[in-house]
Image (cartoon, rainbow, N blue to C red; front, side, top):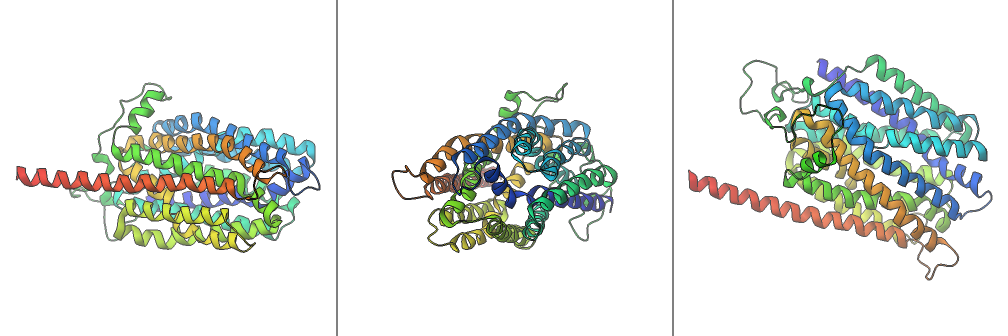
Amino acid sequence: MKDLVGLGHLFVAAFMFHFASYMVLPAITDVTMDAVCPGHDECSVAIYLSGFQSAITGLGALVVTPIVGNLSDKYGRKALMTLPVTVAILPLFILACNRSKVYFYVYYVVKVVAGIFCEGCMHCLLLAYVADQVGARRRAAAFGLLSGVSAAGFVSGTLTARFLPTSSTFQVAAGVAAATAIYLWAFLPDSGANSFVDEACDPFLQGSSCSAAASPSSSSDEELSPRLPPHKGGVPSLSDMVALLTSSLTLSGAAIVTFFYSLGEHGLQTALLYYLKAQFGYSKDEFANLLLIAGAAGMLSQLTVMPVLARFVGEDMLLIIGLLGGCTHVFLYGIAWSYWVPYLSAVFVILSAFVHPSIRTNVSKSVGSNEQGIAQGCISGISSFASILAPLIFTPLTAWVLSETAPFNFKGFSIMCAGFCTLIAFVISMRMRAGQSGAREKLAIVQHEQA
């Protein structure tokens, strides 16, 4: 019961955090354009500013996230989780006060610094907290539920922004962000490697009870040997992280798929809003509608579809299905021939929403309970590294194809390139599944011969 209460408080905090973070997303493009290039629908400076912000944020998160994850393995998740939820208040508060050019640039600098601590750390710590409380057999469903709750915060924040003026949007977001920090500090029980719940005591397994006579064959992560030696300090070295990621086929494959999928995902995020504004004249309301459809599809998928499918097809097949949906999602954006096509594309988030929970589940099952933080932090770091490269690649490409000097009339070209990155991740996941199936067949033959 205590585990369920802790997870309940965690889900509430995750909902509030994402509600505040995503509420401002539909408005930030217009705020940026008004501050940098007032009266224009196309602005290369605004695109480059957004790309630079993503690159610096990703570079900082690449370094910070594994360290924060490893520290949470030692000192508990709650202590480290208060850092990103507190820092996230500052940039929202600045634009809640004013959105003039001076305030925007102050916001911009603070947002870059805050993003280093918020971009990957919060997600990493949320996943590690859930892994502490939920056994391996139901972890895919639990991770999907966490993603669904986060998507619900995204949908609720976007829907709220749809009906609020821009000034009120930032004020409400700053207030909710402050309430999240207070709620987290006051109600969330602490969690760490020592609080790992045994499979027999898993609160997500109905009808199971905690007892000393738990089955010795239980598939608990407690049975996994640590893949890293214990650290005397709190900061893992680069060699430690590389050793962890290369210690198994599952971890190395997850790292590669994460890189290419995140590269495509961040590339799409870099280009999409500016592309839609230039191609179809989208503004704050259209952005909110599009994000609302995508968020609702992701929430529906992760709260209802994924927990059911996870019981029958497993994380590997869910990953392949999700990547296939992700490819369709991105390519439809790139070839959009009318203003309604992006809305159709957003529906495919129902499938692409499987990707991240499936990857994180495979990673979580491949390490011991005292390595959940650093393992999730390493994967978040790889995603952050992709977020560094994506703006460097897709920002100039997007500005080029949207400019008047573009050599061809194909404004979705940069998005199509992002789609090819997602396609590479899909191909790699297929090869991984084939390789793992072959390895399992060989193991079964060897065991049969030995018997």
